[in-house]
Length: 381
Image (cartoon, rainbow, N blue to C red; front, side, top):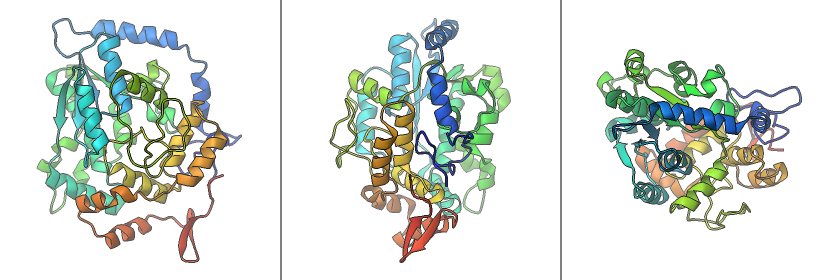
């Protein structure tokens, strides 16, 4: 494992690229962002909205909404700053947190229309368990539903614009199919990068084709007939998750994690509360299964949520690499004990079954056993 010289991201992150100086392409893009004419991008954005803003009171855009700081910031700005009429579309969290429930209601009370889509729990639990065992990813089916449902709603209700947050492959280091993909999402990107599987592959003795409707991406012909376009908000505005948190805190009653205490010393971030496995208390806090997902990332790729969050803060100039390194060394790979029982109960797994699956995803080139304990071969540095 090699670690980026500027942030903390290792080369085990899927699709990331390091240059000859040992710097990852996410850090390279962070430098590029400093040279982008963001005022020109904003004018381009406003011109686009002028051509699609509703004139008859109908919804003119959809925001795939989790109730988190990022998607809420986008929805708030579209409605109150740019005079759009957004419809929020949510795929229900698998096991919603107290913070998620609070933030969902606090934001809707500002005055938004909202569709909440609840996946068939009997089917979805089977898929989550299956993918946990086979892929080490209990999120896989849920992620596919999150990709498909907003576009299905846009197609069905003839709402031509969907606004996503940032283009992750550009922002955090990955495979950029083309410059157009940094601005708009299309089927090629969804299938090649965001999904990677055809849900029909999940059919077995327990799962039928009729069970898979929420996970199937809409037909290309239907999308094109309506003219649905999926835009990345982060193309038009400099993306910074910490600044989105500050914006949320300022404009509505946004609740952060309540348990524990953070050592992250940032303006506006309360000391009370810290998400296990990382240094923050305001990011990805809507679903109790999130913590297990990021722990499995640590097992499979040798880096966890603390490295992820610290790297993003470093890339945006919010903290130094040294500060990020110290906190990531302390918290990366921390086991999410607070939500572990919720995970086992929801997945219908025993603790023994859980650890058997987890250990099956430890790659020998990343992990080794010393004195009966698993340790990283190449610790964070």
